Length: 188
Image (cartoon, rainbow, N blue to C red; front, side, top):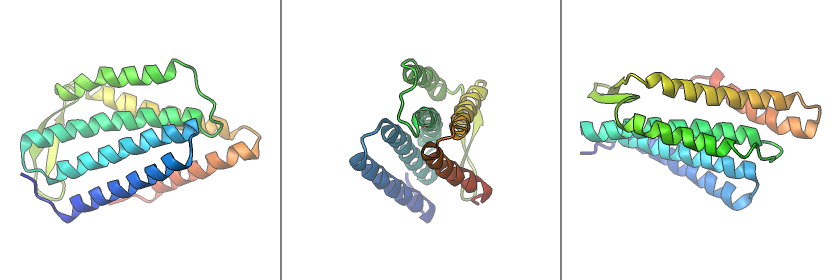
């Protein structure tokens, strides 16, 4: 059973708005960095949609599926972010082995999500959150890959900022300032 509340509706509304922005990017640019950003953005949209369904379900099996799905999508978002960071702003493709390696890591992690080795046992809790879960014995792998991909992406940005070309530095500074400022003002 699904219980739709204002929080689920807002999550789905933001997913639609974000997806429509992705459509604008798709129609407006064919560069490799725009395509990589689009993959990351649509992964984020799927993640948001899963969060909305996790929030609105009252069935423990469905909640567990969407909790695992959201972890799966989080891994894809982090891998896509790293790939985007390696492309941006010059659209110079990284080594040919990087994209297959990122995809292979996600393929390896997928059974770990769905067999309860990273996340398991959805539990109903009271309040806005509605669901909690337990971490499996290999949950540290998700944390390691998520944080590793994000840190490597930001490291790539930082190294690109040191390039003396202002034309190359300005888009990176704009993107980093947006990401870093969003971390300064926490959401509640």
